[in-house]
Length: 144
Image (cartoon, rainbow, N blue to C red; front, side, top):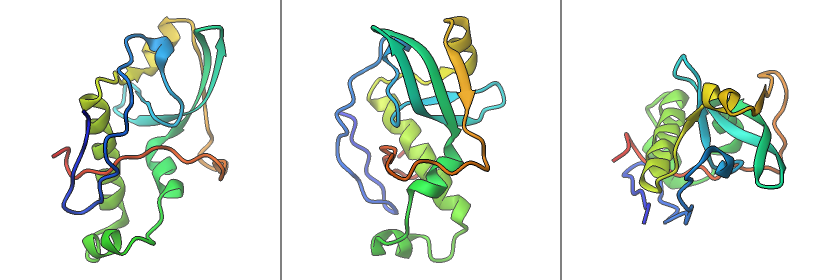
């Protein structure tokens, strides 16, 4: 079970994500990818051939959170009344990372993708993200 509970953000319950045993089991809008600088990216688009991952398109995770999250939930707004927007965004990202770890979902690197012959593209920071795609962000504070 990979349930995360937080005192500032509501829990969405166990997401039910199965472990990913190899790089070809990466799931779009769920898994994260890192780069050599420590940035995290959301896998936004996946191209496969059979069971083989051919190409991924990545969006920087903080950019993704900024456009996937809204402050309409009163319990979220109240938890961050005197905080910066970045505090909320980092809590969401760190909670998602912890949830992936608890679900035994490996966070692969850009280099892992390239070394496995997978083409990597990036979503431009000035390009709007598709409104019909919502990542499955889970909520936690500092991975607790």
